[in-house]
Length: 343
Image 1 (tube, one colour):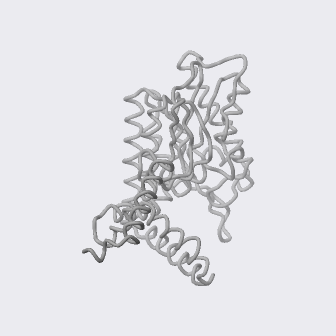
Image 2: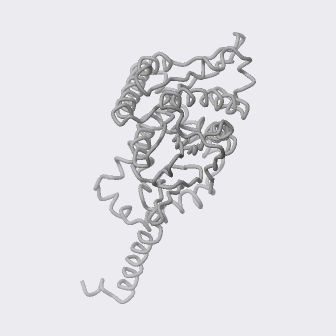
């Protein structure tokens, strides 16, 4: 035992302890949920003593940088938009949440619209964000409902659960500094040394696994039920708390082969229609919005929109907001509005 307790060993141990304490004290937002891969309630929401909340990239949530006051200012119509990469858009100011804010402000509404789109988020990870933003007094929640990310949700959930285990192989990774060194080694050093063909093979294998899972009828039905159950729970909670909710259902552009291009909703519209129509819950279908138009001009690929598509969607959402405000007596209308500010 004495042979182990050498000055060098004690110095190393002391440095590790100092490094761990320092990381958790001074980089708390980076540590929070860091290895929960999006299955953390608080990750990405950085609260400051002055009441300001920052949206940051942390804990598997790559939020676009934005900030707002924890307590909603009087008269401000605060909108949280939850979704995946479609919501996130090509950039903060080229995505429909930003265009929605501008449109509402043009109408004299003191609007603050926050873009909470995170690429790859499915129903379960979006549910956690939904629960978190209820702390911030939303005037309206726009929930972009999609069913194409459940493979990613399931994969990341398995990773998060596995890491929580106490198998001996996880013990060193319970120390934050070891985790970061491991990631730096794998992602910033060793991964770059791996030949491109090998990296592509791993990516293809993961894509093949996703395609195989999506083509499994039982797995697909399981995901469909999951999306419906989680969305229904969100609607029930919003109604219980009397928070207005817009269900925005995704559609996909099918333009392959020689057949005419068409839009499909994979059953999302029917699900949302069954949940909407109740007090405070509205539905907007991307398929119904774009179908009467030359819709190929608005899509970047099968799911993502071009800026023109984001702008059109924002105007349609603004009309829905008008319905909500009409029900509430037209509150939040002012002569001049101050925009929500990105970081």
